[in-house]
Length: 133
Image 1 (cartoon, helix red, strand yellow):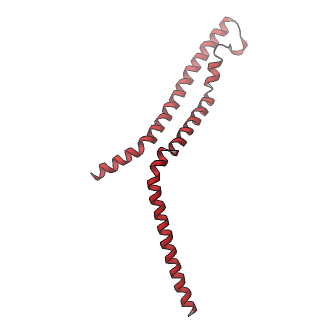
Image 2 (cartoon, helix red, strand yellow):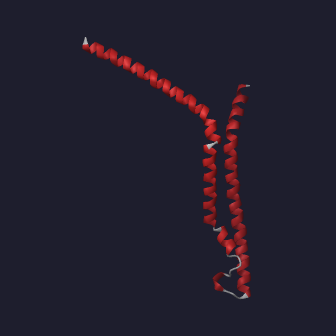
């Protein structure tokens, strides 16, 4: 008799836990579905923008663009004659132009990522509505 009671108690405990945790999981799922747009356009977008700013700062440091701009009029290799200064100026000018083009590429790519982040949910909703109509 005691074994039968323990088996029934186990079945009741399992079914109660299954129902409880099933409802809890379902409630969290519903909460997450409604919270998703707030997170996506709130904290998620803020985290993305902060990440993009850090990414662009790292790319600027890797390209050393500000260092080249700051030293554009300083002669290379300590040659202070007019030929050395002229050559140094134009070499640095070419370096600044190419490094600026590379930095512009990273900036445009970052802006595309942010635009994609903003427009992607709208596109998904549009496609869902388009498929059902």
